[in-house]
Length: 215
Image (cartoon, rainbow, N blue to C red):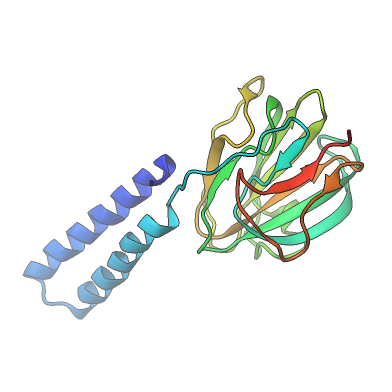
């Protein structure tokens, strides 16, 4: 299955490829040949990059699920000043261009914080990326606690998509957005939550248990 948010990108690159192929019929220019090959590679790659596999969602209101596919980059104690406004734990997930890039909700509850910040495009693994890069910032809360997560742009990721608004009731494991071409997702959880992943561990959105709220 292809992510719905990826349809426009496939359509744009497909249209560009058709135009280049038509031009190639009338103009014998090497530059057009090169561009057609490059756009053709991107067009085919998009079907792989924008894949959206079904997932087996674990159940339990105490669970905090991974919102992204990728590799655990950091597990740190940090001062979170926007939403928690206290010291919390941060789990960072690095998403390479080869990972599934559809993002899923880590917990069920009500969306009570949404923001979008313009910024830089540092490499996603850079320590400063969480603070200065372009990003969406979303907070969800339920009776167990709350979670904040950031979709962070990287060097290649120049398009962040999310479909959440304040006051919306959401369910853990549901798709909520997409980041194009490699990026990072930071998850902020309560200081007393039990982290269930390790550094460099491979995780899957909506399937891997990232942490558990305190009983």
